[in-house]
Image (cartoon, rainbow, N blue to C red; front, side, top):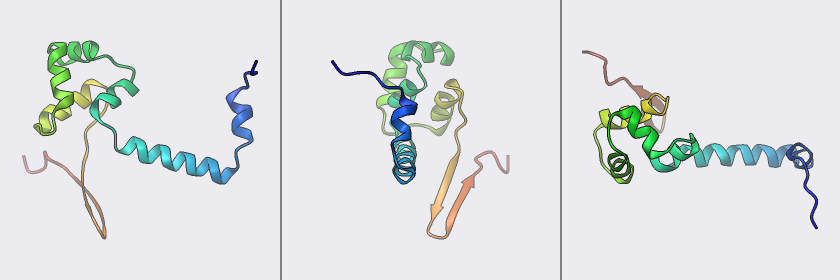
Length: 104
């Protein structure tokens, strides 16, 4: 029978270079995550998110499957999870945060 080890013991055996690569890969994977997985990672159900949004669960399900939606809809979805939507324009020379409310 295999023995269980603490994560801290296992992690101590991983080289610092490998730990850095694992951290980099984790950030890369989290940077490109579908809405459904983001919600699940935040430990929220479609039903609980629907209650916050004031819609029914099937509406949340449909929203998560959409490939095109209004930014205001996406912003509401992210805010309902406790986050804030930010939009960036990425160019070869750098990135710029887009403020959709500027000029209003």
